[in-house]
Figure (cartoon, rainbow, N blue to C red):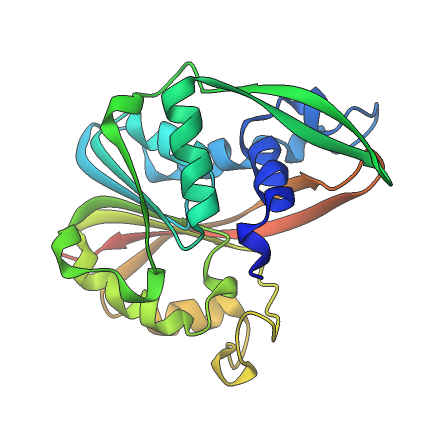
Length: 240
């Protein structure tokens, strides 16, 4: 079974996306600055009002709320139907109790809530494949792909779609921890050099690199085990 369709991963990602810093970490002296990643990374798109924004690989949907603060229409797409169902349920119900693993067979419950900021009525969540985005999606002023490209079997298929997906002067934010793994991407489709060099080679014909920075993120697995990772964030502007 695809791990991204399991309830365990759905609950981990709901906590990752919507849990408070205390809910996620709960330890004094821990990397609290790594919490809230889905909100932080989405703000790199800018804060000017626009017509349309696309959140590709949206997972359970937190970044889409940030995009909806300034975009009149937001499409969130993820390959996992379970993630999309969870995003839709929270958008509809506003609050959900999820199970959080303590250790072994011990679990507790924590409440997550739909963000107060953002406009849920502007958001549509869809199941779909980032490598095969349909033409009828149209074009967008902003595209966010957070922690996506190193989970795609053929990431260049997505990257090569961006010029026709993004309006002139539009913004693309790509975030990736550069964790290239054979279980997701065949080695033949890994970057030949560093991820940043590879992105520049692919993107530079149609996009200008505006910013390159790093953002940490934290995913809780148990009360004592966490994934602390640093995502490389690049911001690109579509050439006229």
